[in-house]
Structures are given as C-alpha cells and as structure tokens.
Length: 143
Image 1 (spheres, rainbow, N blue to C red):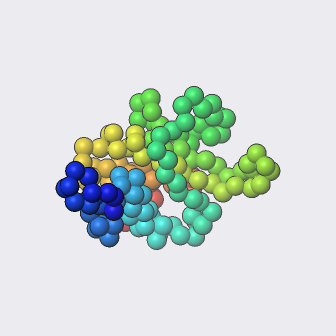
Image 2: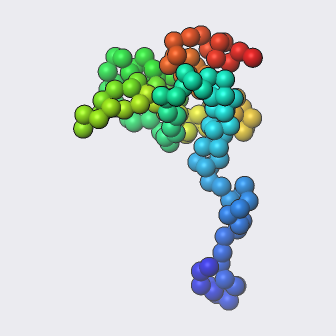
Image 3: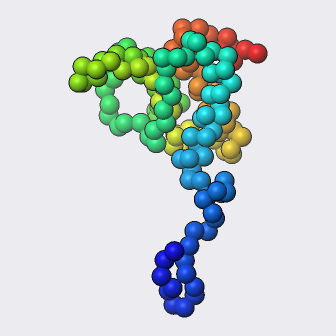
C-alpha cells in the first residue's frame, strides 16, 4: 500500500494477484504458448525432449544470422514471428539445446483478438516444430 494522497485513502492494486485480470500481457502470452504447446507435446513427447520453447518480446534488430539459422526464421512480411535456434555450442564452449523463440509483440500485432492470437501461436508452433523434426506441418497437427 502506498501513502494516503490528498485524503483519498491508501492506494493499492486494482485487482488481487490471484485473479486472472492482474496478469500482465506477457504473462497471459506465456500461458497462451503453454496451452498451445501442451497437445503437441503430449503427442510428440519423445521427439521433443531436446527442444526448448522460449518467448521474447521482439526480435533483435540488425542481427546477421548464419545461413543454417536463417532458414529457421518464420517471417510475416519484414518482421520475424519466431525463430528456430539449432543445438550447438555457445561462446563459452558449452553445448546448447535446440530452441524455438516466439516473438510476442509481432504475434500480438497480427491478431485482432485473443482467439485469433491463440490460433496464430498454435500455427507458428506447429510450423517450427515441423521444421525441427523435418516433417510436414500437417503431420504435427494431424489428429
């Protein structure tokens, strides 16, 4: 609680932290990604054990990617929506796991509402996982 300003009472949060309305846009997007990933991971669990999924706000500007990583970038126009980073070795010489990075702000900008955003996130995850596994997206999304 903050101070009593101009005699109007103590300030506090608008919603309790336990309510969904108190979650930030980034937290809501993270939950959306987990919801979209859950059915895919349930079906392809053994093939996805060495894959991480991450969320970043925006892609790095002016980042020159090596040719093997440039193929894993999913674009919608000029702005990347996601990126598949293959497994490799970091600057310190330590091994890294393969990773799909979803860019929150470009995805949110292309969706009109939360249902369309959920569909877009699902489609992007399906495409990136298909690239990672080397199969067609229809196979990943097939029922």
